[in-house]
Amino acid sequence: MLLPKATQVFTIKVSARLAAFCLTFCWLLYSLTACEPKEDIITTNPTAKLEFSTDSIKFDTVFVNTGSVSRAVWVYNRQEKAVKISEVKLAQADAAYQLIIDGQEANEVNNLLLRGQDSLLVLVKVKIPATSDTSAFILTNAITFLTNSNRQQIPVVSYGQNAYFHNKTEITANTTWKADKPHVINHFVKVNAGVKLTIEAGAKIYFGKDAALLVNGSLQVNGTSNKRVSFKGIRRELLYDDVPGQWQGIKFEATSQDNHLYFADIKNATYGLWAANPDNDEADYDLEINQTVIQNMFETGIRSYGADVRAVNSLITNCGQSAVQGLGGGNYQFIYCTLANYTVGFRPETVTLQFADQLKEVDQPISSYRVKLFVQNSIIWSGNRSNSNYADQIQMKNEAGTTPQLEFKNSVLQTVSFAEHPAFVCCNNLLNLDPKFKAPISMLEANVPDFRLDTLSPASNKAWALPAITKDLDNKNRHPNTPDPGAYERTKE
Image (cartoon, rainbow, N blue to C red; front, side, top):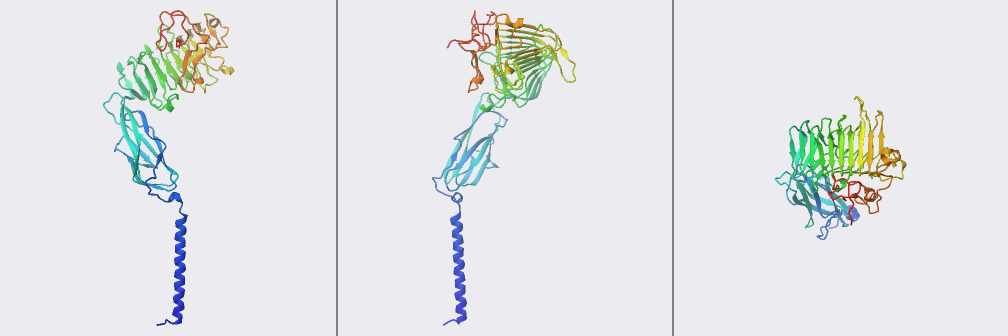
């Protein structure tokens, strides 16, 4: 049966509109699909694997109960298309490790979309719980990634170390620190007046940021040639190996006496040793240093306020200000010592060896005592003579009008002001002659300076043999008749 003509016309119009709508819809759908970037299209191809910025993660010696810094791993999708990472997690459930995965603080994250040619960041840190081990121990795990049925992993290894922790500790009775585990100082350790702290050979002392060892009593560091005692910052990454100012230093207060440091290494503090004992007592030394290295100080290696200090076979180097600074007088001896500043950022207004007979402090009376200085078989040098600011490495201020007692023998001295002073021009001293160290730090790419004398050094064999001192800083024999000045005896190679 034929439809009425009007109905036929209406049906044709509806069909045409429907067809046009369908064509438009299909075109839009095609356009949307065709315009989707490749990097947003997810591939399920099992050959699509992730790549990583590192093949392993290592935390080198982390103290127990002390959080580490974070290590970073970049995860790359080198494919043109996106991938869905089904899971990122630790291989073993382990509370010691913490992950931050693409900004999410969690040890497992699922269904991460990583667009083509894109990357994401995974951070990992560790806080190792205490154990009964005295030596370092290993804690292992891995970060695993599951993508298109491919499981990939990055091994994580941590070396843990138990330690003795000292946090705002006050020592009120004679105490000995053993060397079986490291000692970690946070804030400060204070040795009370009349109390002795003895540190065994081989002990390792680590300081947190701005931490200090405060000695009102006595400190006796008993290192040996094969078991040296070390004092340094708690940061043990290679990046911090020679960064100064990581901790405050070792401070000897006015009541402190009978202090000695044998075979010690002090590095990367604000000051190495700070001694305050202004008096006229020159009979006994407040501080004796033997076969010790003080290096990489933000300010001074030894800062003294009228104290009496004796150093033998020791190296003080690379300090932001002076290697040795004695204010307000004091009695000082340096025998077979090397005081050498080769710091790149060395300040022009400072000198290697600086003394003054007067000490001025805010709200304190001015103290004035004479300077008594004896230097024998030593080297005082800065390493930079091209700038006139560096030409004088010995400074003596007599603001109180006292007469310093100066004695220099068989030493290499960098000085202009005292080039004609009777105490300097006598006694076989070498003035302003480069001692030619084998490899001072300014000449090295590696941070391992060598302050032994070169074979062509004008100072070789110029020291005066002292029967009571037969070893050098490394405990090697001094030549019995013609030893070398400075902390090290040159050996034939």
